[in-house]
Length: 391
Image 1 (cartoon, one colour):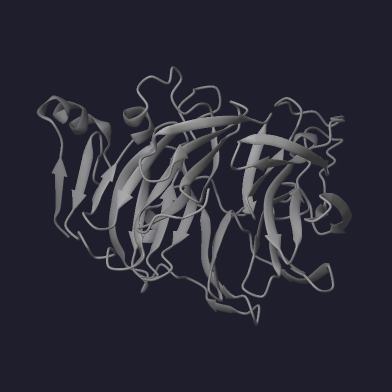
Image 2 (image 1 turned 180 degrees about the vertical axis):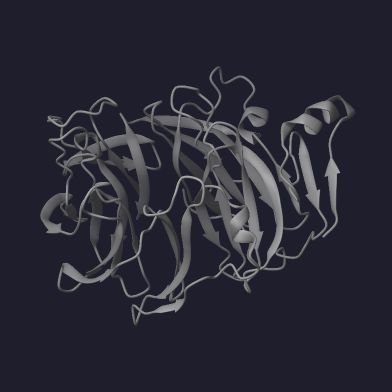
């Protein structure tokens, strides 16, 4: 596929030395691919991609891809907000749209950055220490927080919490204490589910990861129970039936990474999928995942790209990238499936130091194009064409 690169002549020299990858568009200003409008006929205008940036580097950035024009723009937050001293901040951990606003969770900067969803112009921020992931319900944002400092310590004693934020005033109102180092958060059937990781407690011989999902009642905002799931939990998402899918990172010793299913009615684990999972997305009845097998060598990683039916729990596709181009991905990191076209977008964090890459695959699993991103591209947020009506 031919691609048109839109850059200024001043950036040409940088492009020539920036990368040796083949079939990749290097992006320092704006790139236009030759498929404008291919995904622009539906409900969505495009998507934002939050790049985490290395911790301590203050290099979290925001990119935008336009479905209609086919253009991809890097670091739009800095362009739209030139007066913000430190730009977006340190470590972008999650991004979600709610109403006409976009919420970026900036972990090491201890804040939720709030922007206009259509312009990326800054509206304000909410200060939450060591914040991780965000979910929304009925005018409120719910954010997981490690509460304490960023510190690996097997004797860590600071339990985390979920903060409830009024999206109209951007004020944090209440806290609900949960387990140690809570990460992913999902809302289903009047309950908030929080994946407790205990990630800071995994250092040394006395490693003591968490194994539970906290269940919080939305009405009372109190923790009702904890469900025993697996070691070092990370992501949690609800399917169409309200059941919860939870990933475990494992302990890098005797407990490998796994995917678990919590039955929302029984409030217990009903299934375990014995596959390593680094990230996943649920679209309809299909759960798309990729995972790096820890048994693979450092030079030749074994990566699975799998689709699971959320109703039957069966593997329906054990290799959804079909043209062999999955071998081009060094470190798969983020994933999004377009709800209408079923195109699959996967990011590659590479060596975690240099800029990463975004790959687009069609629904048949064939690569369409790839583009350079910011450092550690990680989290997607689809932008609807029509403006929301509530904040």
